[in-house]
Image 1 (cartoon, rainbow, N blue to C red):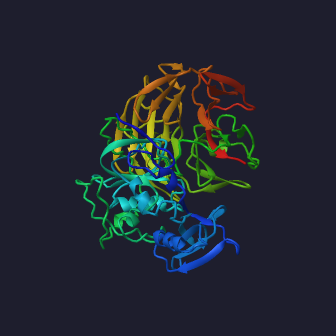
Image 2 (cartoon, rainbow, N blue to C red; image 1 turned 90 degrees about the vertical axis):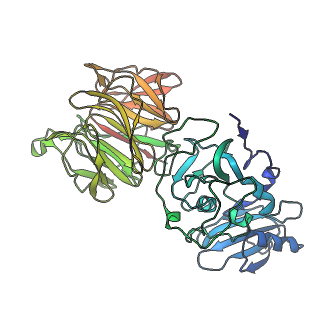
Image 3 (cartoon, helix red, strand yellow; image 1 turned 30 degrees about the vertical axis):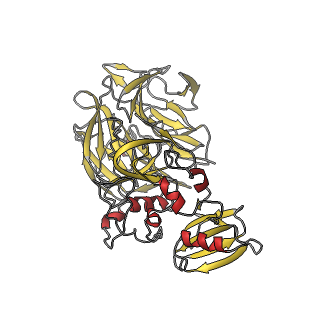
Length: 534
């Protein structure tokens, strides 16, 4: 497989001005000061015209072109651009850069950074979103330019056959693809083809007549007056572009702000409920309000929009004995009760998927459960598991996908299945053994599964499913057998907490060894989440 390596924007054959083109700064504004501002031009059509104005002015060394939300676009001429500020407020999109004298002419000299039939290699780590039904490559790039919606987007990859747009945070390698257009977020394809530069907050630009079957290195999108409603879609498609140099097809290559396989640089785990009812925070306490004991086992917990939610479980207290369907949300004063689930349940999964919570399976008064319900302010039906199960684990791998692993009903399960809001159910490679009451988390592009119970014995086995190769591999075993425990990624490290066999301890994976540490309380049949802290 041929690979090319990228520097600055892209470094592949034909990209002779890549480093110079990096002088053009998107959504940055040169310093406004009486000594630095030379002149301004209203109703400037685009950044190319603005650079031309700068080149004609002997006092101008740098320019900033701004598209405003309410006012006409404008061009500002400066002596230099040594200091910059962000494009904020009324500024919707901006480009700053040098005069063309001795520098690339924008965008023309930089348009050869746009490639056809080979482009950025898309993978689990650099993909911000995969958007289906995008009418052309220009619209795909336009979405990448919208930093209010996709602040980390630096590159795009567009499949002209499937009309899928992938927004990427980095581009370190290139690959050959069938019918693709790829490149950095600017210069705009519309400028490169002679069309107008669209505003990043208005409706998407007109669709292109670029052929999906005959795109070549010399082709460029030509604008028409058609405008498809699909341009504004924000749903996520996780089907990847098939590279002609590899038959491997990852199941998930979409990593969004709402679903990230990485964690904040500083975060802490919160252990909730369980047999002891104790809420414990590790490694530090981010000023969580004092809580009453949450005496419920097999509850679920997740974080949505920065708030901790917990639901369900089983209570042995006299006044609430039995399966529970109540849910609570964290607040500065404690917990606030929200809407109940449709059915009481325990030992189910509760995950954040996109902008909603998904509760699935469990056991209740009717036995093993197979329903999935979603919460985005109120509960509603989401789908069905097959088969029904409880004591399973689940992880969200994108804004529209969730993977369910193992569990138990009339027998122990080893199956692994992914549910996609777009494509439905997909069967993935099964675990190496049946297990239930285990824990799982997404970490470095893999689903990590630890402990659990199988064939009448608790386990210390840890294994990982690679989301790109779809192959399982073994990881170092835990020091203790654990079941009904939890697992989180805390400050970039894998940690397991409590459980049968290790209620008052946690383990941290360092290099190839699990390090055992003590917890203050005892935790089993509990739930856990992670939250950031300053």
